[in-house]
Length: 446
Ligand code: NAP
Image (cartoon, rainbow, N blue to C red; front, side, top):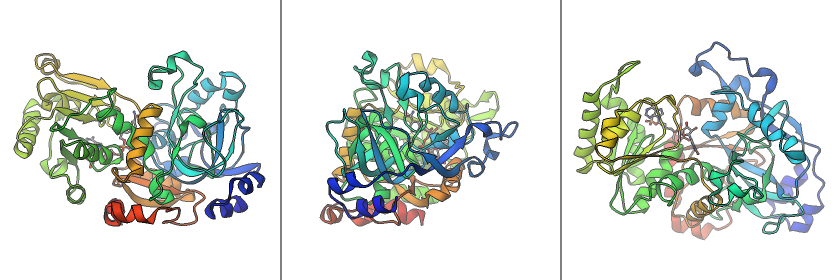
């Protein structure tokens, strides 16, 4: 790998990279099938990714005609890697086994280890015979929508495809590794003004937030909209508030510490609620929600921005959904992509129907949405919320930080990149976007 790394870092021409032999094995972060019961009987919070995520050498699989090998310079921690590493809500080997039934190329994925990771930035090392738009040496970021383009159901919004999967979660050979195996239609240009680790943290959460708020498949936010964003300094939320600001709306960010309030203020979000300080008790016990607390929350929002949210950006799930449905304005939309605190949801349906509100489900993004969201990063209009950087060997600790909500924004992971700050090709664009803005989360995280 060292020859490949030197050539990639030096920006070697395609012929030189293509002539270098590929290794038979590569370093990867994996969970093991033999360990899926290791946390049996333990409550979620005590399940420790540091025990279940291993970094080891695995064989390099054969490349399908529509795929590329990418030398991964950096990757990031997404919550799906937390789910995989604690084997909740179920072990991901079931996904791999199902994919394993889909022909000769699918069969490669059904292994006794799962290479995790759904983000990455790096350099294309090889392309399969059917790849047309990418070549060896291209600097790329990777989005995680994994679809079979010969499946008719994948052609009117690929997120509706019967075979739609999330790469590195529902497929093997993910991005927390030195080499990733991806479909060519997962590739996007790397933003030239960002380092490898800054470029690696965007695709999954940025694309998801873009679809939820901006796309015609999501809430189609309009100028002037008030948008309530839960977890507004987290992975999804840090992109969501940027989209609201960029689109002429008013974000109301909810976070859980004074440090996060300060970070959001620095990002330009004026209306911020510290949910811990406010001490909302939406649930008075495990089975009962308290409408008085929903009302107190609604009043706090109105006091800050003078009205009710047109859109609620939901992902905490059980703990917050009742409050989200209540707080949303008449005719408004609650767009949800997750349920971190529990997926069996309860809300008062009277508030939904009598006030003609809509709950909309959303999941990642199609290639077009991911591409458009990536373009905004390339142009410096969306900033990378990178707050901390770990090495691949430290992947368990990095996932632990996300599992326990100890981070802000996104955590980057250095794979092949030997250090931080490498890979910036357009220093002039970086200067124009602003070093201070690009590194805002990193400085707050330090
Ligand atoms: P993250 O970086 O951990 O951020 C989530 C934020 O949510 C935290 O910063 C926290 O903010 C807030 N939060 C956590 N528990 C909460 C609770 N009980 N009540 C209120 N706020 C709470 O994670 P993320 O990357 O944004 O992902 C969030 C969820 O979305 C995860 O479950 C993930 O799996 C899912 N997801 C789904 C998709 C998709 O395509 N469907 C894509 C990306 C992520 P404060 O503590 O500061 O309030």
